[in-house]
Image (cartoon, rainbow, N blue to C red; front, side):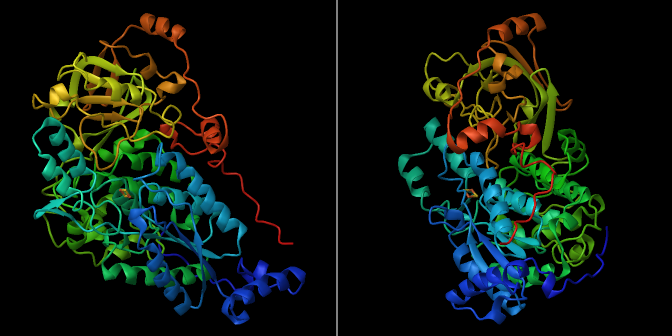
Length: 579
Ligand code: FES
């Protein structure tokens, strides 16, 4: 590792030259079609052809500005002597896509990889930000392995309600809880609707979007400082131009994802994930991204790093501020500079410099928003990986977002067979539940959901809410929004749909959570569990055809990153023949 030896490829070595450079029938055909669009030969032959992979869509509110930003990227590409082509990609919108946007992350990854492979492009600027778009775009680009740079959409501005800053997701949940408890009027609730998301950009809490864009920067796949710039700040337009400018040079240097995404780069990303108290979803995505890069990330590795990294980002849901504040405080470079000694500074990044060089001028401007090592929000990382008889392959708990009282807890299970069961019984007067109960949700995993929906922050039953209860232990094989909070044990693996121990839990079983010792156990005898297993019946699959059926057949479990098994393979995929 360290500074990369300068290498230059010649124009005739460009990948696009296979399409445009040949003096034969095929070359004629390819060139004539560019001329059909109105380009001159010298515009595109012998120049790096840059795909601007754009997840803009009118139905994706987090990406509404990306069409405009693509024009800025094009300016950068033209000015650097490249040839830009905008390519639409499947736009995964967290807000609207059902049954779960996670079902479609791998589809975006396939879309990205195959578009880059099948078309005459030499490099790519990947434009995304809403939760699954970051990992989806990066997974595809890693597998294609041509020079690529990630351009995060940027967070929304702070929400505002009667002068009070609101965080998307986090405050929605917080105030909905109060609405259910009867402590917030209908008028107040309705008036928040127009203030909680008031600009383009992704969720401005430290949810999955802000986490994944931060981790793409920590991995070295964005320009320095890119992940925290608010979507509507004019610096974001300049970032887009800079990304377009830089990708052209990356093509000449042949700087590919495989040069950047080393095991050390992934270790940096996990370290940063812990220091920002990132979304639990990041664990699944990082495992998948590493798998595409040829590395196996064991969940225990996350836990080891978590135990040596303090939480420094004071951002909701674990902290008090929002991403706009984080940007003004110095952004991710300032946070990374504070944990320099825990990072591999020799890792190469997309700007051709190593991480240490990029951090040399980082300044922490607000020490309340980005805490110092002497005053962390939490002394160790915000994520614990649990193992035990209830989760033989692991489960995840965001300790920074949990009520400390529950981090060591034993209580009786209240079991819901699926989410329909939650909706029909959770608030019924007959539900036998107390504050020390452990709510258990089955059949919400990768296959059972399907698509592992974000149902893991199970609502507190109304009868407890009205008594003032705001947190309790909840366990599922689902995921949880990065903007959510509470003592929610997630990603239990193997999931209940495939017969994991979670499938065998019954009402009244004692469950023991011990976050300090990283254990999660079902206190039921092996004999009784064997009896239940013999009677267990696998639920019927939700899909018989189409993408859903492919997903059910080939998706891996949570601890393996929920990638498709055939995409994770390291076997080379041939370049297309040009005829
Ligand atoms: Fe797009 Fe939250 S809905 S990031």
